Length: 132
Image 1 (cartoon, rainbow, N blue to C red):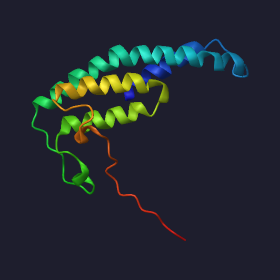
Image 2 (spheres, rainbow, N blue to C red):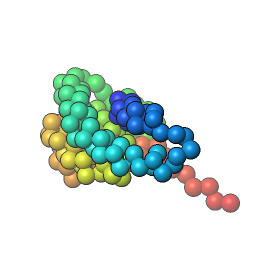
Image 3 (tube, helix red, strand yellow):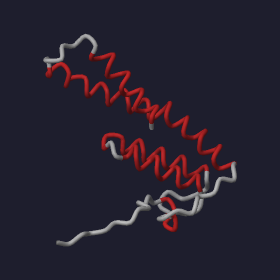
Image 4 (tube, rainbow, N blue to C red):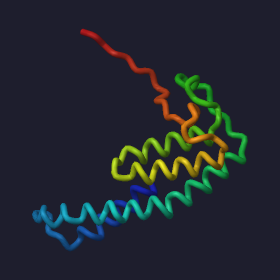
């Protein structure tokens, strides 16, 4: 995620360095270029990095720690990593198609079906509603 943000900020700062702070029209005009650049980055560089990370995690014997909320987790660290990282990237609506495809590819590595219950992100924190 930090690499994604760094690439995004670098692209944005390079595009904005010659544009006046007060010129909001020109500043807003770079957003389509930024999203196009970030989609390309997600489809190629970020996906390749995540594929290698998931393969590494899947080969190790990491265990999900027992913490409050961990009973909602699958116990498979690689699957939990995939669900979390794809959920975070999926928050950017314009990347949803790319993220869905990436999640499918990552889940194949750990032999989990895309629509399996274990592949669905569930917020591990408790929700409380305070009624006044």
